[in-house]
Image (cartoon, rainbow, N blue to C red):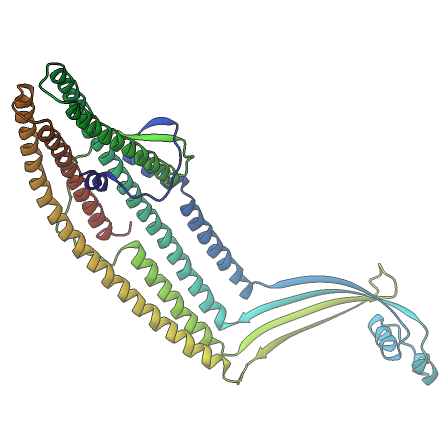
Length: 436
């Protein structure tokens, strides 16, 4: 009996912590706190910001690059010396003397350069920007889906918390019933109608139920810690649901699976981004057109600007054959796209199966609610009759204890059926939702 009951009231959670203060909690309040403070959503936002930064970085394929440099030289190298004189525009007839050409004097040369590079036509940059835009859409959908997943976690945790508090009420009622039986048994012992073993039997039963209360309180603390983590708060409170556990009303029982869901849309955007990667690799086979220009000042003094010159041009480059590297990249990117398409189809099929299962679970749990409600009422009536007969000395202590245990178990069974129905309804709403 004890193992069966503990199985009913134990709720699986993922964090363990301590709580110190009780705090009423509304479901919608918990969801809003999660949206504002949850760490996972903050990580998702960082990914979106990073993708936007990557997109901004592709502007380098359209905007000019401008740089300035100032360089100083000190040399007596024949070739450089003559070249520097040409750049400084100070060459004279005497400089063509072979002796001076072969053994020039030491000289200083300072060059100030302004360099401009302007991309004109780079096809791969256009594809890269399109790919990054799809990636941003995918990360935005991923954040939306993460928010929806966390909302489901909040709803599930809140439903389990409601169940625990209702189960605790039933256990406290059971403790009171055991205490009443214990009082009656002690009175009957004093009158010679009960044995000491009967008193001991009731005390053992009372202790078991009190242990169940401790177990429930521990699970409430653990679940409160988990809710605090979901909401991005410190684990220092025990939450009390402001709404009692009641059967959830499913708004659209006939709702169907839709591919217009945030996670599916994220996969589609990611797939489109991968298609753009194929285009990037293909565009790598096309020529590139870029312009450049530079303006120079040359002088023998560090701060001088005595002679100037400029150069401008256009560069057309084309990698006609790169050892089959680009063609292999194209093949690999196409295979990646095909794999992503297959994985998306597999993901959709699994979610459709989950929806079918959730709907069957909902029907099953509805039937359980009806059956457990009847069983609860029958067990309660049986206990009432046995307690009246026991007070008159017409029933054995063991029979009353068994009936009390059964009554408590049936109450918890009924509460668990409602909880399971609500969890199935939450799952159906999640699986059939559509993107905002």
